[in-house]
Image (cartoon, rainbow, N blue to C red):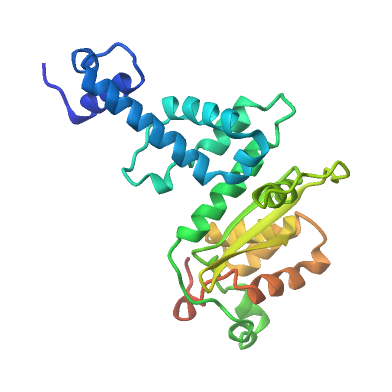
Length: 255
């Protein structure tokens, strides 16, 4: 029987989980148990480090238990564990969706976006003066691209307020208004900046990221809120550096 690399990888995952499989003989060796325990500890430590706001909310023991359960279902695909845990927000959202900790998935998502923002490639930013030279029709056919460090999320919960308090070690006050919040993160001069934005701005960033020309992106974003403020939202996003400077390709016909 021919065994492929994929077969070996599947068997290795089964062995790491302690399941019966083609590598059970290897998995039964004492040395493999040491390796499995070391691997599990590294995964747990990484999840705890990558999601500090979640850890603050639930405490050390709960966090490590959740991280262990996650690691058993989601093997690292990269030896560099600093980028491990992308699926952890969805894992938490599914695990605690019907409990008093239902906000954890949303808070974890912001932890992950903060990490991703900090690790993203850099680029120069688009400035408002670069758009001022366009006519109205020319501006509508312009393609804007979100800055490569930009990470944004529209939450149905006050996730940013909870996340910011938890990340700084502060308690979430009982008078918290349970309102939707949208968040944009950008890395400026090596520092991740967190901005409160509106649902329209999130929709505009989504549309630009999807490759729509600015006119079509604005039309789509208008459906998310008051259209009379859309120009102000665009100018605000440009002012804080939400778009990358791609001057040679701003007026191309296709994204």
